[in-house]
Amino acid sequence: MADDTRKTDDVTRREFFTKLGLGSLSIAAVGTAAFSYQYLEPNVLYEPSPVVNEGKPDRYPLDSVTLDVNSGIYIIHSQEGYFSLSAVCTHLGCLTAWKPELGIIACPCHGSKFAVSEQGKVKPGDKIEGPAPRPLPWKRIWLNDDGDLLVDRSTDVPPLAPDSFVRV
Amino acid sequence: MAKTGITKTIGQHFDDLRQTRVWRSIFRSGAGSSTLKRALAIQQNVFLHLFSTKVRTRMLSFSATWYLGTLTLGTFLILVATGIPLMFYYHPSVPQAYADTKDLQFVVSSGLFLRNLHRWSAHAMVFLVFAHMFKVFYRGAYRTPREFNWVIGVVLLLITLLLSYTGYLLPWDQLAYWAITVGSNIASAVPFVGDKIHFLLLGGNAVNANALLRFYVLHCMILPLTAMIFVAIHFWRIRKDGGLYAHSSEPAVVQAQAAEVQIPTPRRGGETRVIPADAKEAQ
Image (cartoon, rainbow over all chains, first blue to last red; front, side, top):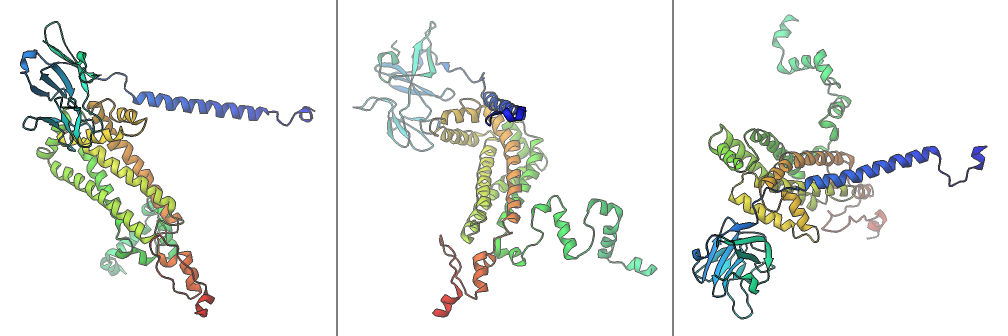
């Protein structure tokens, strides 16, 4: 009698439990995927601090470019003051080098060249030639209470802005 | 009769061995050279059953395939056989990895041999995979019904390149460090998710201890196991798709032969043309 009164779009007990089971498994599968993704992303990194101490300003003579190989940054002492450029090429991440005889920064991997001084429209860090898609970014630089130059490698600052220089 | 026991040839001794209960318990098909027995020997062996029980003799000649697929498998087996002993001496940690690589080179007995064999086989495998691909392409062996096996082959090509790439970091020298720096930065050029891929691949923002460990696990576990699964499918599909590709037994060719018409070998990109028998008579 019950069967006769059942509407066609009614769900049987078996169908209900099948859907419940498959639904639960789907949710569990999505959850597993999400947790697996989270697991693969480290929450704590034991990488070197982005802030590096570059010592006393008088280590850097006027009009000098100094590469800190371990930190991957340049400390440049120009007429306007001290500023810092990333030494990591914006093309594919190679460490660039300062070429004093040419007065430019050059990347050994794929030949990108960057300016270090202002010449017309060219700002320090700008690409002169090569495949690099962006200029070398300027890094935040300041003096701490001990009078040491500190550079924050994780913070880019606008080129030539007054705050992007340290004046001693 | 006693004399025959002494003068038995090695072959006869082997035949006796094959009749023993122990042998029969291991090899279910048993001795015998009938077509059935020989087919069973292939079909009932866990390693061989992926392959066809019968192969056209012509397809076993060097000119048919240049043995490129088999040679690729050969280099893969050498890489597994040399890679596992290398793992006994290698710690995937900074800076131990570089020291261990140098130890393998200069201190460990036969370490130099194993490492060089691993390295040269890796280079050979990349070369052979490409050669195999070109041979299959120019013979037209990728066409129906073998399209899917071609796709499996492309997956295997990618796995081979990834194995080569992940293995490159493990010596942890300057070459490895900068190659992986450049390579992983290429991954970050992917639109939208590039930086995420870069971070997940390296397990950090730079090529570091985490990256070394991840590349080690990929190189020694995940990629080889994936490769083995796809190699198994690749071989199995050869049988399922009608054995090694032979132009003369393609349906179009067989049809044409039945109609006694010679059709030219297919040119690049072209479909095999079947000329009906009456068309020939008309000429």
